[in-house]
Length: 208
Image (cartoon, rainbow, N blue to C red; front, side, top):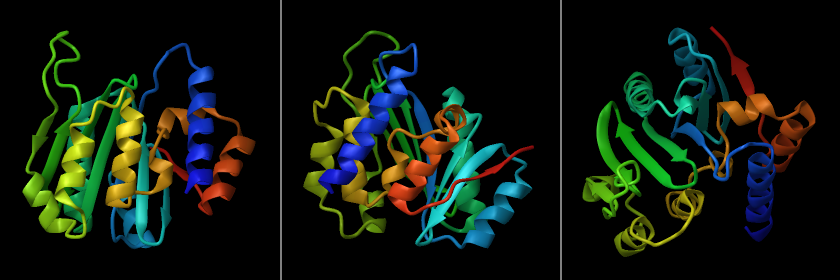
């Protein structure tokens, strides 16, 4: 676990160092309990431009438009994937390391939503917005409610740290933290190969 986290933190450092921004930006969608052929069929039907990977029936989609911070599009895409695949999807977006948004759907219905910093764009201090936590816990029955609330209301400085803590609790794939379409499109092939080797995965790309 420590080695894995060290690798992720190194990856985040390299990504941010190659950018003109102080924080990092990324978005992706996790699809739980999905068959590889089903995921590939739906992604093709939706005519997306994206990277994707799947391991142990967990798919991750790094789609081009959601990485522009178009949260409305990202929410709708996650909902659509959930509905078409009859699956649970987790849409996550990190804005400048300051805001973490999460929307979780099941069969097209909203299970949970979270905004770590709802006052960010107005300069106000507003506590995190947490919606439908009990509905989420009915799906993730092994998750401790107090631990989840502690993570969602913690005073972590960086959004990716909140994401990391949620990853551990909800058992999300490691390679959701710090990775989005733009980063995978930006880094060199040998760096992608290093990530693939570290996690035992393979990224594939589809284009319109």
